Amino acid sequence: MKKPHLISALALVLGALAFTPSAAHAAPYEEAITFEARSGESVEAFQGTLTVPMNRSDPASGTTELTYVRFPATTDTPGSPIVYLSGGPGGSGIGTATGPRFPLFMAMRQHGDVIAFDQRGTGQSQQPERCTSSVTIGEMERINDADHAMRYRLAVRECAGRWAEQGVDLRGFSTAESAQDLSDLRQHLGADQISLWSISYGSHLALAALAAIPDELDRVIMAATEGLDQTVKLPSRTLSYFERLQAAVDQQPEAAQLYPDILGLISRVHAKLDAEPMTVTVPKRDGTTYDILLQKRHLQQFAGGMISDPQFAAVMLMMYRQLEEGDPTLITFVLQRFWTPDEPITLSAMSMAMDRASGITPARLKAFEQQTAASPVGAYLNFPMPQILGELQEIDAGPDFRDGPFGDTPVLMLTGTLDGRTYPEGHAEATAGLSNVEQIIVENAGHNLFMTSPQVGEAMHTFMRGGVARSGRIFVEAPDFSKLPELGE
Image 1 (tube, rainbow, N blue to C red):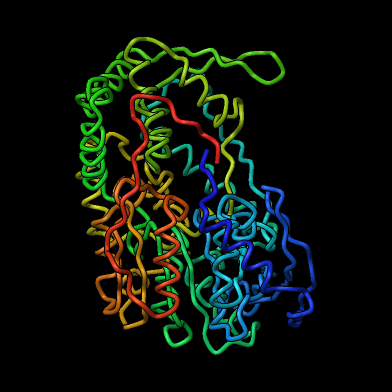
Image 2: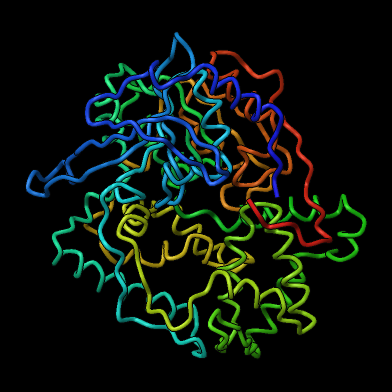
């Protein structure tokens, strides 16, 4: 469980003193609200909406409504509004502000209004209903990766037809359209420029905005950067991540004794399940149980998510160690939390279409296919991409979208060395065309690094004030990989 840092608490106090409802006013289409975080803290804010074209290339496609929450600046001389772009695709900016990053949202108000933005198709913004297809994969069904991918392509095909019948234009769910939404939001806020604060897929959108509307952007913060041709990550870089994870484990004598060869452990468990899948009995909340035939693909899907942050990687390591010994305790816990039995393949229009539209260049796809077999997570890190590339080719954003961006907009890029979802090599590649990038390496941090150290916040504040951080490297302590971590927020 992360403990609130002193600097974050101090920022909250200063923010509360500086801001009163009478000192700020609602903009058009906004209403005053009391915003409540999950911690129980609350702050006066404004909630607003704006209407944008669904598909700017087709006026007949109609419009969609976007929602945001604006936290007014705590300074008499605010800079450009700061728009938070959540990851996913599919994450809610408003939802993020209610969670562990709430103190950072409050602290960022010292630079200007902070906008928790629900991108099109997410959170409180207008979105199509999720599609529950008729395609199933039985819990006790043994299928290979090719058949598994084909089931998802069938589900995408079915759901696309269903959404079309409902009048949903999937061409509107593209990062290129979302970049233009940011331009409309800027105008709606009455600002000459906006700054962007982004993470993961949000950085993908920020990079698209840097390419499409550079003159409208003041400053950009990115963490866990995903480039415009990096929706699908290269398996060779996943292997490099596991080398860094092994190096971190080797620094801890007890963990090094337990996990002297992480890749060997994973390979042995996968081979064991390929030869003979394991039947796991999982308790349900209603007191009943269900059986699942545990296969390598299940572990690869779970591991692809668990390597995001080092505390979850510690869980993954122990899960594999137990499975090698025939112990299903941890995998049962994971299945209880993250698996819904007897559910047909269910898709989100926004999440699926955004990734499909961003696509992948032929050269990167070829590299992916050549490298996949050697990766511990196989082809599952960004599943169902690139497996669904054969579907919805009409929504692909095209090669020009995946090229760039270029320019001199000030960018702060935060890179965690133990981020298993996006990789340091990819971060440098994604921003190669930008001439004004300050990169800070956060040693032992993962994908979700904003709250790992007070120094991360300090670097962000220095950047927003136009300064340069004193050091390009921040050190945080890695979790004890020999023990299960506390998995709260």
